[in-house]
Amino acid sequence: MEKKLENLDLDNLDIQILSILMNDASIPYTEIAKKLIVSGGTIHVRMKKMEELGIIRGSNLIINPQKVGFDITAFLGIYLEKGSQYNNAVEQLKQVKEVVELHYCTGTYSMFAKIICRDTTHLRKVLNEDIQAVKGIQRTETIISLEESIKRQISLT
Image (cartoon, rainbow, N blue to C red):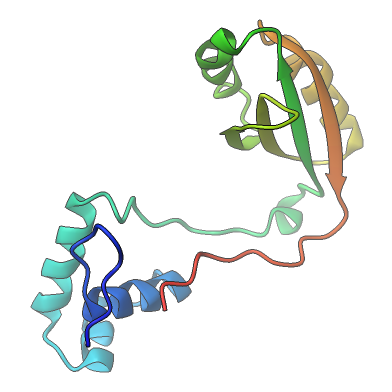
């Protein structure tokens, strides 16, 4: 029986293709085709279909921030004065290059951000001069990560 992801027109071949690429996005389509015993054209067509469906949003080069001088990863709980200020705050936070992830969330915080900085001096500058200056942010709470133990994509199999 073929496994299908709910509400999407994906079959086992699509899931296998995605799983291979999630492990190594630089692998050539021809190598994927050999592993899955299909043609390179089949892989190309399937990839195009998944891009059009919005399942694949691109591929990224992943660097180790510490190896290029960014030693502090922090998570920031952001309290907005009013929920209606969310869109404006997002637009302003997009201008802060140290903000690498931003989530609108339920619970204690209005927003939750991941920021990466060179050191504590850089972190203090980003917090005080950039993020606290965003109109609508009432206050923030900072959690500094000491170590990233797990980072992975979702498992499709």
